[in-house]
Amino acid sequence: MIIKKRIKGFIYFLLFTLIVIFLLINSRPHLIVDERPVKADAIVILSGSVVRLDKGIELFQKGYGQYLILSTPWGLGLTDKTVHTLPIPEKQLLLEKNATSTYTNALYTKELLEEYNLKSVLVVSSDYHMRRSKLTFDRVFRNSEIHLTYVAADKNSDPYWFLDSNARKIVISEYVKLIGYYFELYKKYDLGE
Image (cartoon, rainbow, N blue to C red; front, side):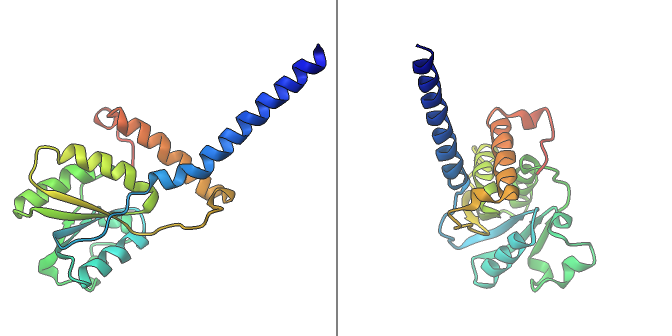
């Protein structure tokens, strides 16, 4: 009887472990939203990494947008002095300097787009950040006539990404933030990037 209980317990533990491993392996791809870029009035780059900046500049130089919007440029490693060294004509570079989170990125970007009467935008961020960006921007822009397209700046195609402890921390952190954003906790608390 005791042996049967131990075997049964071991089988449950093994099944639970396999389910957790399966979910972990498949969790990162779920965060990725990456649409084909289309010509838009503007390209907005959400702060967080230089890879995002590089992708936004690449899209701009390929003619996908008339304006490049940097949402909190210092989060992209830029200062007031270095932002003007970018290979973008100054009259086509718009700076949004007040955002402190993905939610405020969306709010202040929407204000800029409306101020300049722009009707379409490419939203550029890291692949793991795109699901939360889409959720947030879609909510903020819900009653507007501005068309949104989401383009991932980088695509981690490593099937063994979960073996990297830093990648696991990023994914877990992103899921925690995604849950908070799903329940609109950003309206009460600044949840950060």
